View 1 (cartoon, rainbow over the protein chains, first blue to last red):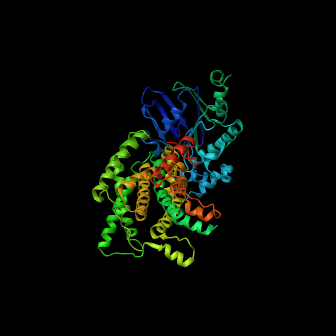
View 2 (cartoon, each protein chain N blue to C red):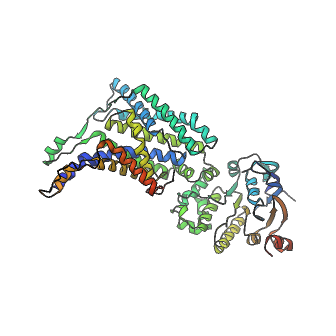
Length: 236
Length: 336
């Protein structure tokens, strides 16, 4: 099998002290959705941050489209086509929605209006609120701004750290629909989710992490059907 | 009752001077609020760097005067402002390289930065005194008045007179232009927006590819422009004396905090509130009321709430009241 579009392979490391990740592998194919689930403290967000270069790996490597990127800083990875939406503080609150999107495209030197129009098509509510300060929007709308900001660089991979944290179930479904739509345009999605059942529902690939190690790896549907996984991680 | 004469008297002794003083404070407070929101510390060296900047402008003025350059009726100092700005941009960037950059690298606490800026303040103060001494230097030339009290009285035939000094008019007009340009820069240009983004969310700005060191350089440059302008206008208006500039630190900080730290519009509003409060509370209202009150009820006292010597007490009181009851200021800024 050909190598996945983005892969963090056999990653071991942490934030300086003890290792959090142990020989952990996360990968996503072109245009697919990969979801990382697992109990609290399993190292889900850490695994994602490791792929994005926000912590030092002692072992393992990260490759994007076959290219070794382990040594690059997060900013350099953005330039390479990776978009990252942090879990919190992921917008510029005092700036307008439109300015947030402009800042997302800061490294671009070409015309950004077309990308902006695409994002307004994806999230129509943002078009209505484009002159409003992003900090004044509701939780769900802020997440849309955050995702939109990350999409402004036209990334080939979009990484989302718990995009549905703190939003209502209806907004969550809506966000997942949008994420599927983004994946259909050929952008690979790698996300960490608390709502494991719903997330695996839309996932092409699921990774169940426990204590920084891969416990189960399979397609989203297979994981949902697996009685072991259901019993341990999905509440029956 | 003669309300018009009351208004003229009030304008002459209170409104116009307060407007000019408020404009000078506003330019200073804008610098303080910018540094606070971008570099995230209270810049205690602000008053003394303002003095050094003005000293550079005075040096430039003397040089130009010696060359016989003049833009009469405007003061020569206006022509020397670019010299002062260049000197202060270089000075502040050097201070940043030598002092603040290290503390940014080790991610020092804001208080460490404040203490470092206190150090820069003492050094700057020393340099200024080395060149200028501690006495007063007057460097205003050109036409001193747009119109004098006598001219005004002859022209209007009113009992009260009003004068408008060139320095006051220049101050108010310059401050207005600078504010408009600054807001245009912050809200419309890419560099300005990147500054606001960095102030809003440092980590996300980094992720978006905004270069923090560039933002820092732009911030110091704008600060240098603002403080040279503020210092020169203040000096033209009231004469240059290093110690007075150090004392301006209190009203400038009071203005920035009252308006809401990090909010440029707040800094401007705060500056005018502080200026009008300082002058209003130390102003002798007797004359104004003698025109306003019905015959026989004219005040017999000076109607002055506090002697002029206590004007900084007014500012200090404002500062304490704001910090106690509304620490975020009028426009919801950050809390120190």
